[in-house]
Length: 54
Length: 391
View 1: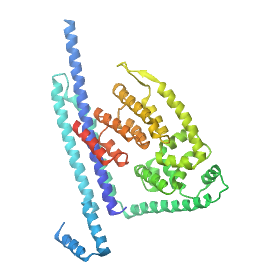
View 2: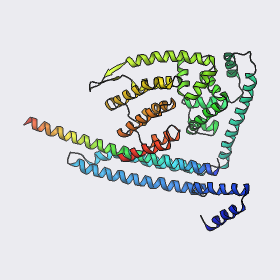
View 3: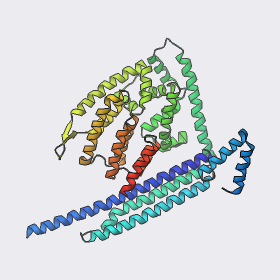
View 4: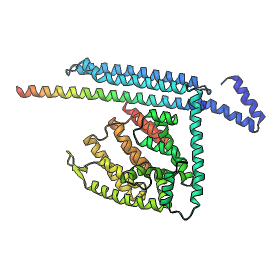
């Protein structure tokens, strides 16, 4: 591998890792959204249940 | 660029001639790399960029987790619950940073032995390829021999380029470990996968000898099975397939039989529908159908099957939103790759866009599609912007 090829390979690894990190950021955002939605649904169901039992 | 370099350029420009131009080109390459050709500096810069991005990602995740915990509190959520969801992703971030840095260090610290090893691999490949071409030329001159007999003899031959290529194809299509690849070829699975399009291209440019060889190795002489043909068709770009088919009657007849059987299967799948909750109909296994149609499309008239492919892609997208088919890059990427190889990048882009909207495809998938040459720079940029907007 020439020096230029090594530099190119390093750049590729860097880009690949940065892309992976960005994907993880998105994955986390979606996971948090899903968690909040689950809590929201639970809350709504619990209020509905209270209202129906009265 | 310092004054010294500037003066050197000026002096070379005044000097003129071939040597000066060559030297100027070298300077330009170094400047373009932006690292003055210094591998260590490139590695240090890359590690710094990865660490900074890792730190920023972790901080972003921690802040988001805190905000989520605050929001969830009034709905009965707890910080502990949020941490349980957030923690594993944070660990993945640390893992990605660590792996990235290790990979950079391994390139940076490549010793002469490893560099020599790679050169040896390249020259060995070239040498085998030359041997094979010479041998193939001689064999082709024996006019009396039919293609089937030629295939048999080539299969038995222990000489030629097949040694390397066979290993490559087998190692890529089976579960051989990276350890074996490293030992045998001093290379990795990823590097071999990346080199395959180039190898196919060589096959086309060198009057099909290489591609002919790929066919023989993939089909394993006379022991032909539909499964092997599937594997062969799925791994061979349309242009190579069509060239092979037009030149080799034996292969043409095999592929025609294969096509008949695959058409029956497609027909069966096209009739295999299911009703979704919304009351609309879709195919029971659109993903399987899409792969079958993509394979068949490789050596058929593209325009003839265009509509069927579009219809199945629409069904795939419809079922995705209802049945959760586009779950992850791992599930979706093979379908995208198959479509692109069959020449339906436009349809693959439709699926990629949907995957992005659903959050199941991201930067890595786009990066890989671009790296394998399936989508253009502009298309990649467009998709990346779409991912960015969701951030």
